[in-house]
Length: 103
Image 1 (cartoon, rainbow, N blue to C red):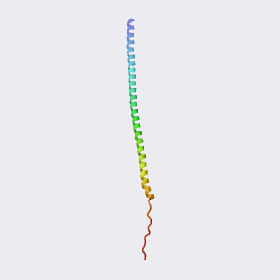
Image 2: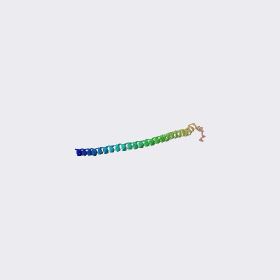
Image 3: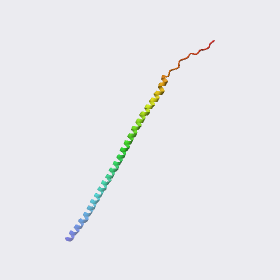
Image 4: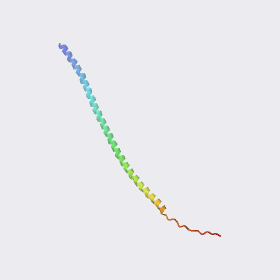
């Protein structure tokens, strides 16, 4: 009976080893998955920061362009008024009657 008991223990020891191995593999997978998720979060955070920086830059550029557009519109309006008003306000020369020689 001792021999059977010994074999049983050996089998139990052999069966425990795969369980431990499976558990170890599962733990390794979980650790790798956590590390991969952490890397993914870091990449996402870096991408988000990059996009936020780009948005700030584009908003700044847009504000500058809007300001420039407003200034150009003011200049165009001023030039238009300088060119149109003198034309309408110009005094027309007096009509001069010419003498006509008729026989």
